[in-house]
Length: 395
Ligand code: ADP
Image (cartoon, rainbow, N blue to C red; front, side, top):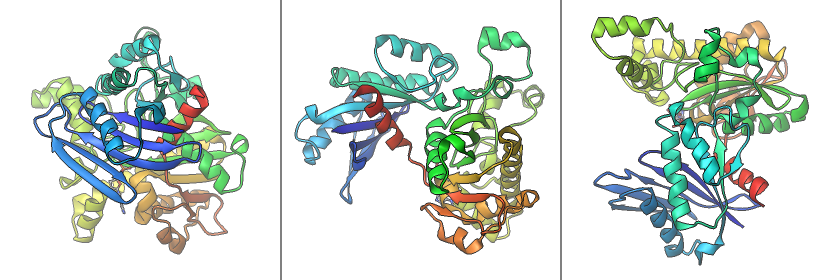
C-alpha cells in the first residue's frame, strides 16, 4: 500500500511516497516557489532526479503536478494506488495530543489554532485542502509537531506569568519537532538495548531550527522550544531564550515595531546574527578555522547553551541513560557533538573521538565504555513517522 507524507509550507510542498508496511521510499521531492512567477518542481526516485521550472499558481496545482509526475515516471499506474496521505501540521495546541484523521471539523480546529502559529497552520491547511480537492476519498491524517510534548507536566509547560495569560490566551510552552523527538527517543532506546518504557533519554534535535527534549519512559517531560519555536537554544537564525525586556528596549532604541524586533530574533540572530557570516553550521566551522572570532563566539554560545540545557534535563529525568544527537548538525558534526559533551564532564561523560568521527549520518555510540552516560548519533526520520501514523489511524 502506498502512503504519501506531505509537509506543506506557504510557498512549498515537500513529499515522500512510501510503500507500506515495508517503509521503502519510492520517491521524494518538492514543489517550490508556489504562487510566485517562476516555480520549481523536483522529484527523486531510483537515483534519478528530475527538475522542471514552471509557474505553480497554488497548492492544488502543486498537488496535481506531483500526482501527474508519479504517473509520468511510472511510480504509480493510477491515482487509486495512493491509499492514504499524512500531513505534517505544526501546531495542534492543547486540542491534539496525537495525530488525527482529518475531516471538516478537524480542519476547522486546526484553522482556529492559526493564532498560535500564523505562519505555519494556514500553510499546512493549504496542503491538506490541495489534496482534498484532487483526492477527496483518500483518507488523510494530520501529524502535529506539538503532539508528543502534550505529556509535559504542568510545572514544565506553565510559565511563571499571570495565570489568566494561560486561561484566556493559551500562553504556555507547547514545544515543537515532536515527531523527531518521538522517533529518535524510540530508536535510541532500542539502540542502547533498553525498552522505551524504562528509559531516560535526552534528544538534541540540532538542525537549522533546534530543540532538546527530556523523554522519560517514552513520554516528553520537557522541551526547549516554547510558546513558539523562537525559544530555547540559539539556532541558525533564531536567538533562543533572551530576557524579554530586551524587546521594548530595542523598540525604543531603534524605532522598530515589536513585530520587527521579533522578526530580528527569528531571522537575524543565532549563528547568523552573532557571526555576521552565515546561519549554516558548516560556514561557521570554516570561518573559525580561518580565525574569525565572532564565528567562534557564535559557536561557543551555541554549544554552551546546549550543554546547559542537557544538564537541566538531568533534573527533569532524575538521571539519564542516553543523550541522542540528531538532524543536520546532530547527525553530521562530530566537532559540535564533542564540544557539547566535553562541557558535561561533571556528569562523567567521556567522548570516544574516533567513534565520534565515524558517526556521520549513521547511528553510532560516540562515548567510551567508561562514560557514565552513553551518547549516540541517531538519524531522524519524521516522514516515516507520518506514514506510520497514517497506517495506525486509517487502516
Ligand atoms: P532543517 O531544520 O532545515 O531541517 P537540517 O536538519 O537539514 O535543517 O540541518 C541543517 C544544518 O545542518 C545546517 O546548519 C548545516 O550546516 C548542518 N549540517 C549539515 N551537514 C553537515 C555536516 N556534514 N557537518 C556539519 N554540519 C552539517
